Amino acid sequence: VSIYFIFYMIYRGFDEQITDPITHTFTRSKVLSILQEEIDKYTEYSIVLVSIDNLYDINTRYGTKAGDLALKTVSTEVGNFFLDKGFEKFPIGHFNGGNFLIGLNGNVNTVSPFLELMSIKFDDFLINDIEVKIKGAIVDKSLSSDVIALSERLFELKDVDHDDEEARVSSEYEDVTLLELQENVKYAISNKKLSLMFQRIGTKEEVVQVSIKLRGKDDKIIHQKSFMPVVKRLGYEREYDELILEKILQVCKGLGNTSFAFNISPSVIRNRRFLQRFKQMVENEGIDYNRLIIFLSEKEVYANMERYNAILNEYRAMGVRLVLDNVGSMNASVEYLKRLEVDIIRFDKHFSKHMDSPAYIALIKAYKAMAQELGMKSWVKMVDTKELKDLFEEMEIDYIQGNAISKIVNYDKLKEEL
Image (tube, helix red, strand yellow):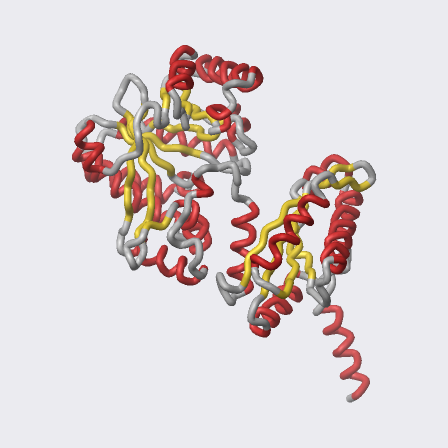
């Protein structure tokens, strides 16, 4: 019996590996288990996400051996950094890809200065003359006592564009727990609690962009940057997009021939069930398809481009206009511009911010010329000064959006203006 028991324990030892073979840090399952125990144990506790942001590029350009070295070196250096700063016996684990989770005693206010110092230390980090780009994010247990919810929030924070004005909008929900935010998002979608705002666009026709906010149980506004990660995490994207479409079609009925531009998630657009539902909803309301303008934007390129293009062409065949958004930024837009058929391209917000740069001016002219040759129109956003407005008009941009054209208003004010 003893011999069989020993062999059984050896077998289980192989089955339950607790350290990652490359970095010698804890595996994902083990570090999550430890972090959950420490969250339950300590009054104040923070989790730090450290990411090698260009690991894919390192593996592709220099080989997986170089990528493995980057993983091992970064985990060692980051561990030594926090040891040098006086943190003791903290868990560090390889979550996935180039991502590591670290658990530290203390709240966000206590730990954040050390994360900032770490970012400075690794700002120009080289391993064998290979540049390694490192990002960090931090949350603490005041947001949630569930390690899975906290780790998901970390990845959302890592991907936030800190130059994005919308990302820095103060939300009523910034200080509530993730569970409270999740419950309020569920409530808002289930009860169709949407707040629509509108901005008229400078163009030959009457076009209005729609922006969406949710209203929680206490009727306070939840901004898009706060609720969209929750919507995705809960698997509510299609339900949310159908709700948006329903509300916009109602607005269409009350505002004559005005066209409305709005976002639909690319994953939802590619869903054929949504396509059928889209047709049914629009036809039931008797709305002209040409009055609907849909923005498309995503970071990663969709693998089956032929299928994507075929579905988009079904929308276009009905008369829906499609806008490829954020063209010129670090996302899939350039690849999509080459391979998808759309009606309009909308330039990334940075073009409006940097029109004093000859490089940006040359780029926008080149994109516009290419779009024109392909039969597409051009759209620029965040035009907030008369000088910018005049410049883009001189460049013959088809759609100009921003405070220099029109402010963001509610439905009643929009109806009055129209």
